[in-house]
Image (cartoon, rainbow, N blue to C red; front, side, top):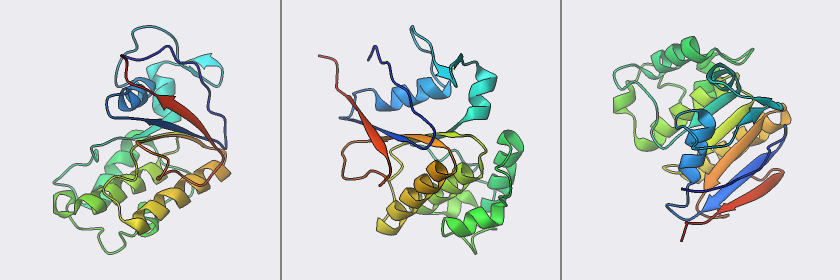
Length: 189
């Protein structure tokens, strides 16, 4: 349980949501994504009350789980997800795989990928999504230093294109080097 919260994230901005385990960071992102129901209050997108259809178009969510179909290849996963969510104009799945360092893994089944490679495939899915608001729950988990830099470059590019991001983290040691405001959540006493 947390709240009440009142905040906004503008285009070109990242909001870093920081707090200890159990403070509600993941719950907040799940509520914003529409995966959990808020007990009270309202979520607005562009100043208008949101509904599930508006959220589906406006929000891309990267959670703790990779959200991949284990028996589909990397390319099949991206094609499947683009069929559900649409895709960013001018982006092709093979380019997204190359951007995240998975060129050559197009035919590899998701279940055969390492945890870091699955995270990279999830990042490729995020990159393909046409949503202007990214909700990133601990995006640096399971990534090496090169992967952390990849996340930072992706967030920077998304913000430059007018997108926005909410990024959860346990500490400021992992945060995108962009215009960032901070929301600190604490465990309820």
